[in-house]
Image (cartoon, rainbow, N blue to C red):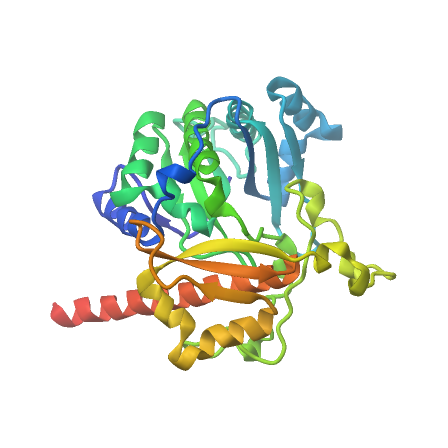
Length: 361
């Protein structure tokens, strides 16, 4: 599978580990009291990004490959429907931790045996048979995988032999990021098992994840005029397409709101009030609140959700808890806007740090 433009967090590169460590400190790990002990029989749903051509290989002729995958591993597996004009599709695998890890290693093997890109001129597969699986990981769970001072990601790479590359940016209209796992087939199995274990044990931090929908590539999700330099996704009009989430490939069938007889006033999914919690590093809370509370007020207005912020950090991770209450749709809008502002501020600080370093040289 292809590798996108990313920042690596690898055991082979000391500078990359330092960057991963910094991000681990930024997002923080969940407190031990909220974690559950995971084993091979623990249930897990793990999504990955594939291209349309890769999806065809994974499914196989008449669905043969995916049927064999299910039979060998006991997982449920499916690929999102094709979105015309978009190459992205989402692979969803659900089952036991052991089953999901084995399934991804078998998928990697299938991709190696049926390469999308041409092999070398003499028809021999590339040396080392390195495969890549592009996992979709909640932005709020990145700290869980990276760990304090980058120790967790280093451990995963050491025990598996795989290389992990984390993309900085969230995918459009979502709070998911791509983590490439590169290595031999068995290395991918071990790495996915270790990653899955982290996700299961710190699942509470993933609550409220806005899943990536490939259809978001067609519409950026907001009026372009709403994006201001150094500002937020503000404006009178903001469109956030909603797709009911079940965690399976069928999530990405034609959205309910596009059907002829859809009435949002009667959609129970939209009307049920729910409360979600996310953690934001304390030193970023001010930029989200804004001067005189202007930014957080605008997020509340655009999303329709009630948002409250803890006055003090919740634990030794130095994170502040944000409590978001509203319908599923309004909460998704709120989460998207909160994370968007966080990313804008992170990019701004990174640019400022780069300029300072250049001036010092």
